[in-house]
Length: 158
Image 1 (cartoon, rainbow, N blue to C red):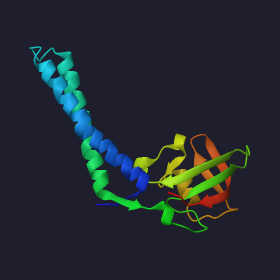
Image 2 (image 1 turned 90 degrees about the horizontal axis):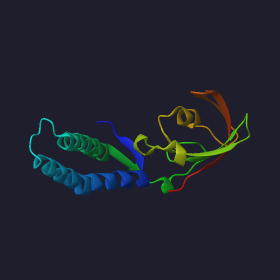
Image 3 (image 1 turned 120 degrees about the horizontal axis):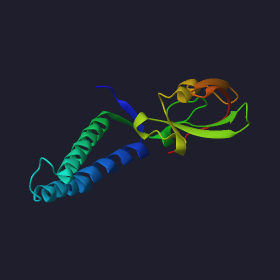
Image 4 (image 1 turned 180 degrees about the horizontal axis):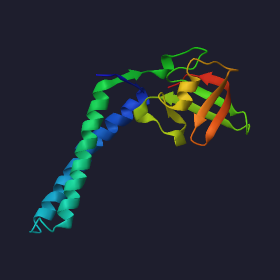
C-alpha cells in the first residue's frame, strides 16, 4: 500500500469529515430510508431511491476516507526547514509575465485546494518547484499555456 503524504491540518480535516459522515450523515440517511419505506411501494418511490443513492455515495466516501487515513504519512511542516522547495513548503512566486505575486503551499493530494493556495505534490506547479531555491525561475505547463515564475520566498510553517 502506497503511503500518502499529508500535513497535520489535512489529516485532521480527513478525520473530521469521516467522523461527520459516520456519526451525522449515516444516521440521517438511514432515517430518510426508513421514512421513505413507510410510504409503501418501493418500485416507484423517488424518496426511497434518492435516499439509497445518498447512502451509496456516503458509504463510498467513508471507505475512501478510511483508506486515505490508513495510508497517510503525516508530516509536521513546522519541523521542516531548508532553502529548497519540498513537501510542505510555502512558496512565494512572481509571474514573470504579469508581475503578479502568488503563494502556494505544497501539500498532499487529499488536501489540495488551489483557491486556498494549496497545490498537490503531484501537480505540474509543484513538480516544477521541487528542488528549486530562491532566485530560480521555473517553467510550468498549464492548461492556458506555459507560465514562467521566479521563486522569491520559501518558508515552512504548520
